[in-house]
Image (cartoon, rainbow, N blue to C red; front, side):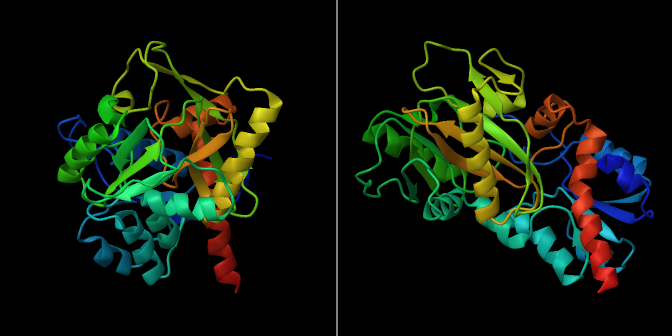
Length: 342
């Protein structure tokens, strides 16, 4: 019996779908809503949940959300809200749900705060003995560089998602270039700038589903860089907002069993040490020796059908969109019923 079939046999629940609505098309000049979800994505998730036999109530994450949650009209929440303002913005909705004692999908407020701050996530992963590139968090562009930070380096906003602030010109080959890029990013984004040594190997992203201790690891997807003349290719914001001829997605990735095992192990251990649950996507890149290194964790991965990385990964694993949504909501339903029995 599939997860979808099992859920369909359970009692219908009232599910609140909580989201931030995208009202304008993301662009390099204005990426303020790049992390938000389109009406089409919200509708697709709602339809999938209704297909499982549940009723769905839509909640846009705005200033009236606390009052609506206090009305007690839902049993559980399906949370995809990104929030706005500050490095703890993704934690706001889970914290509210905890306040009102409402079960919800995905990681809790602590994990969402931790993973949005890329430097904190890297510190936790490194302390657990997992490999990640040398880095420094900069707030002025004048900070002294650590000795283990080697050029070229990649500069990115420390507390943004959806590759916001990562452009083709985000790679610096020397100190002067680094400081110039950092200063430009500081003017546009809060939370500091993460500067990390460029990893010259292949890039992958791995989707995970289920409990923290033993997640289901989906087959890795590779981001294949097509411009062979570029010595420092990176996955940029421009790549994510439009079709282009610079990258393609190979799902599942064409990797040998040994590398596949290393990718899956790094993804699973990162998921565990960062406190993820239900769903996440871990980005990984190989170093010059071919060893996988943690880049970052996205515990609120995009769910746009046939477009978002996790949906592409699931499709390659022969998991339909409806089944993917069923996998994500299943643990929250289990926790809800466990609460009722206690």
